[in-house]
Length: 333
Image (tube, rainbow, N blue to C red):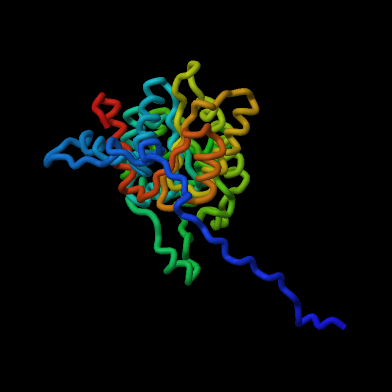
């Protein structure tokens, strides 16, 4: 009987002596390089303009991607194409709503879309001047999300949104009401400026869904209206003329919902025969998540048309806004 605890091994080959004198070398002059002096950062003098400072950034990685998306936005607006700003709740929670509103009012952002969280924080900030509770504290006693007013207002928007869409109804509710801080509402600005505004809800993910009066039927119908409205906007992200620039989809701070919604909208639009080859996309967030990488900047667009800039919203969005405005004004950026 063979003892399974014993086994034979083939002998290892003897080390092969290498003759390093036979290495094939080439001239450094013939090698392709990823770094050149033309791409290096440049110190700017004291008191330099923003445009000069932005132009001084190194032409690498995040700075290169930021420049690319600034150029894409400027070209899209000059060609009359949409720039759609899709965002998560943290855009509002990091104090960036006024920047987004300014770009809406200036005609740079031409459509907005968000998840349920973004809509809730926008509503609460407009009506109370405050939003976002400390979940680690309130989850322990079961009081997390247990507020009356927010659900009542979102329910009202959903009921009206059965026909016009949740985003449009929410914007009109805020803009036509007496909310003391409605000038800080992204959806209010969208209603005032008459641009598409949509909310894409995953039932069970938002605090207002916990309320006993939450109307799942109305929420579902309203967000379905919004999904189809969003598809119409995405259909306009292609080029207006052959070889012309396309529109831009900005995904800012949504790691799951908006990238998934975008991917489905792109499939619908292409299935209906719309060419999106000129479309450009970008993802802005603190981390590189799987879905934005795949569903926003890789799968839906041609190579070189998807851009990723990793960092804090409260830093990146002011930079993006100022750089775009400088370029639109004809100043280098």
